[in-house]
Length: 271
Image (tube, rainbow, N blue to C red; front, side):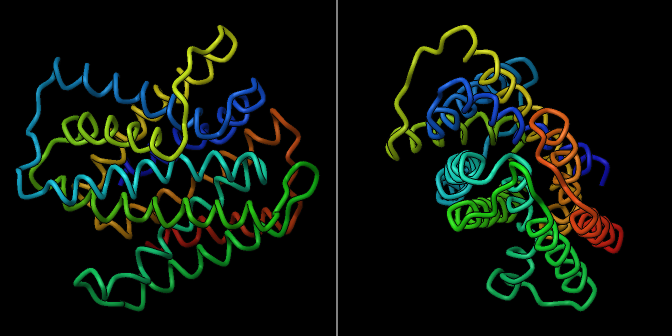
């Protein structure tokens, strides 16, 4: 449980850092590519130093789905959501993941149970209130809702497939393989490799390193928690992102938004 919460706290910095990178003139897909490339380098280095079990050959389809449909689309849509609606809103909508995981439980060989379903619905209501409770630079446009919700679905896929893959693979081996595949997928989607300037390189490097530590913590949490519960625990991420976005960019939340944040926390506690 503590690993999933640590990952959420670390990930709360991704939205604000993404906004800094976008403000430096980097295209959203290029931000996603830079983030994946730096995180991949960190995981490859960590794997070489630490070692770790590689996924078996039979898990190759799941690994490809994890990398392309999960990580690559998550990184891309999250950046597009930040550009369309602001850092706080993008992070909030990213955390609709537990709703997607819980809703898909019967398709994944599981069953709906009242308590996790209620917890996911409570968190979803809180997230919806958060999305409606902003002003200033928080823009709940249709594009922001679309990209943000899509990133939440991709995040859910990362949780579900990651849970399966981590049965036989170490976290560092999984991400050392998946992130280069995700980077290649982003290039196919239109991201252009670039040599960033000095003021562009800093936020990209920070995004990659932050993603490395957060992904490592989340993967360790997935090894001991059900996918839906790990995703739900990570729903505390919007609160940290909201505070950072307000302090750095003036993305303001009113009383209604803080009520939504309380419901998110209640869903986490219930889980």
